[in-house]
Image (cartoon, one colour):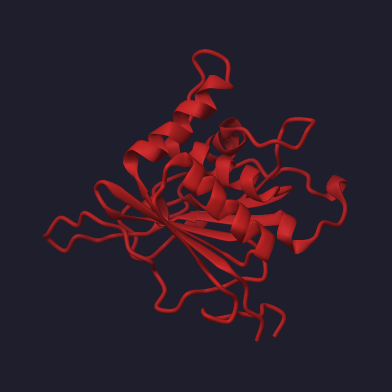
Amino acid sequence: KPSFPSVLANVQNDKLAQIKSDALTRLPGGAIVSTGDALAAWLANQLGSKLMIYAINARGKDAVAPPDCIGNVCWSPCVLPSSNDGQWSATDIRRAVTTHKKDNIHSIGCIPTAKFGMCTNWTKVQHSPNFGAEMYYSLLAHAGWFNFPAPFHTIYQATPQETVIISSGLTAKQAADLQTAWKELGVTSVHINPARTVIGWDWQK
């Protein structure tokens, strides 16, 4: 089965705040975006993504499922960058979150899998029933480390001060570039897991 390099970053809250602050400086005054919006756009820009599927929590919304439904319920709209130069903005992600808009992706033609992306923020999507006790952290919902043959970002809150971001299914250059970008942001705990060191998954078999 195929395997691809992955990047694991332990990101402190102040670094996420910096990503959001930088995103807001490029938006009109009064623009409203979340840290998650800014982070997804930042990841897409680092990897040169042309198309992203972004998972959105759907529990308790539009009668899709009750808010206390056991299990993960999400929409996954396709998102395209709105700028002519292909750069992603946090508002591109915010548009998908607020309108569940599915862009017309037929006009972009064929793209290599490395230019495709998927982003799942388990902190927002994963259902965490408390069963009478408060739960503070979001955990990965799968026992294995799924390594898709295209960039896949899994985000979860490890502690109240730290978010763990796993970007798998990368090319060697994407992994190196993303590691550099995290380090330039000031993230000190960021590592590349070489190909063949994590579970591979071939969605064609």
